[in-house]
Image 1 (cartoon, rainbow, N blue to C red):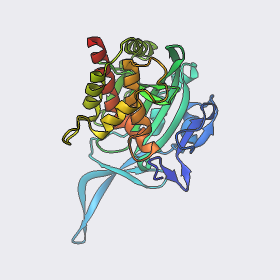
Image 2 (image 1 turned 90 degrees about the horizontal axis):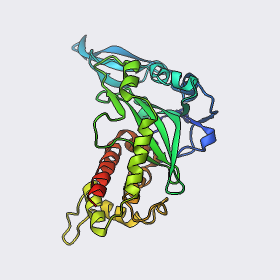
Image 3 (image 1 turned 45 degrees about the horizontal axis):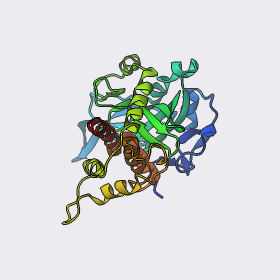
Image 4 (image 1 turned 45 degrees about the vertical axis):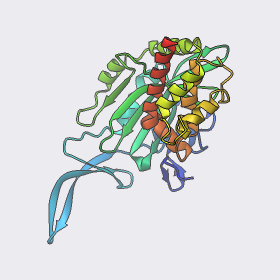
Length: 318
């Protein structure tokens, strides 16, 4: 399997909390629960910095400045991306320092960290030690995810994610309201960790908000027309004559009652929403880590937000 997880000299650039079990492909360095953010960064092989270096072209024997700069990694001289003069890199040390106060006070535990796409995306995930149980045993845990891309066109992203333990689905806490529990910072501005924490409003209220939404979805039952409308909106309609739904949408309808965790609130909008999260995390994409990349940072991250918002909207109308 081709990994999007970065491999250097045959070793995965990732660390994971061994008390929580192996990660999605069993690679990486196992660490203890008491790791500091800085120790986690070193264990994951992320204790390197980046530097902007002017680039030139060779033309008729002369070196001519391009006006662009290369972002070069200190550990091996690898060029990660091409950027303009106004692009401000955030060092990995700054990203991990973001968690330092929370970890030292016991509010969070570092969970995983690593790099994807040959070092172009660095992430750190912390357990916020807040969880809840729904419907007699459907456990959901909260995490804070910090992605630090060393790639032109990608923004720093700090957000809450939830995990449905029964199936390891990563959920979203973004609802159709203002003040989302996520902050994106582009590289045209200087990263201000204190300001990001202020904007996030780090608090257990975020987890409570998601719990209320989940309980509401579990209290409402869908009909067959709801299923077709929902999955048609999320995954698209068919272009073939006589077919209503795309093959992916049809797959969603098929697994609603058979997905892991389907025994919790059968026939509810919660069950319907989690068919989308299960497919995004475990079925869509070419490999397990490409699915994780998309589910956290790519197209499927947005799909999950859309799926939650649509589920709430349809449940309110049911």
